[in-house]
Amino acid sequence: MKNFKQKMIAKKLEQELSIKGGIVTVDEISCDGCGDCVETCPFDAIDLIILSDKAVKDLPFKGRLKVMVKGSEKALIKQDLCTACGLCMKNCHEFAIHKVKK
Image (cartoon, rainbow, N blue to C red; front, side, top):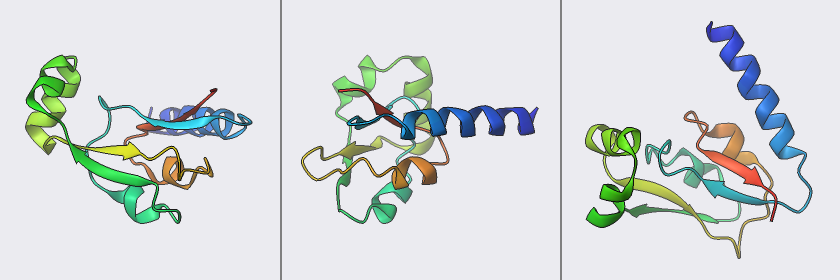
């Protein structure tokens, strides 16, 4: 099962990286605020922010549960600095960073 999941994630990542002119976004539900993406980004285009209590309450159950376990820090992409190179996407162990069409 693990091998299947890894193959599916790799295929999805390949599809997203092939998007031309897309922007990079963070899925706040999946992000655990580890900061690996911040350290990886060569353009200093990612910050960790602390979600407000209201923002946490607005998350679905999975997101609120992750906040209870991991904390309320989440990655935030600074779109003006991001080149959508994909390094952060490749290094996110939660697969919380995605490239989407503008």
